[in-house]
Structures are given as C-alpha cells and as structure tokens.
Length: 106
Image (cartoon, rainbow, N blue to C red; front, side, top):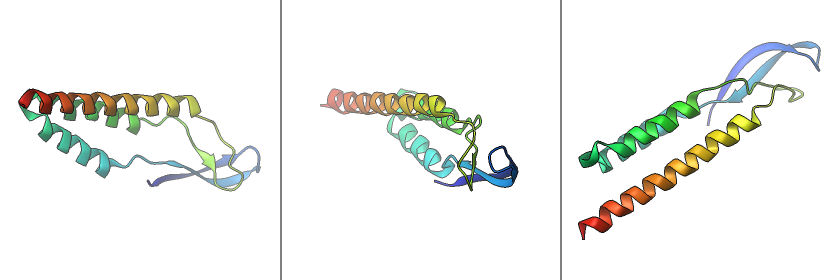
C-alpha cells in the first residue's frame, strides 16, 4: 500500500511539516474487478460491478492526513471502519454467490 504525501502546518509541532495518509492500491482493485467480472460474466458480471462499488468507496478519501513527525492530525477512524466493514460484507457476498454458481452447475 502506498502513501499520499502533502505538506501543511502542524498545530502541535507549530511548523510546516510533511503529512501522509494511506493510498488506495488501484492496480489490485482493477485486477479483482476484472477477475470477478469474468467469473460472473453469464450473470451480468455482478461480481465485477459489486467490487467496482467497493473500489470507489475505498478510493474516496476525506482527511486521514497525519503529521510525519508527531503523528497528529484529524482522525477518520469511523470512516475507515465503515469502509472495511463494507469490503468484508462484499467479499462474503461474492464468495457466497460464486459457491452457488458452482453448486447449481452440478
């Protein structure tokens, strides 16, 4: 996972500092979207479409910047928990969907 880097004034250090936040891994999300789209192709590629929604949600960044020296900054812990929960639910739904595809084929 990469980092987004910016500069800004830190209230606690009282200086201009480098600020960082976690970046979205777009290559990984692209691969997952394509693979799930191919696996669920006969059914309108619902897996790829669903993962595309998860990708968009994880790419939306509001705040999350932290001072690289003291670590202070606005916390977006609640948003992070919501996005992680949506990802987990999405993965479970896709796994259940794929298992029903293979169980119906028998």
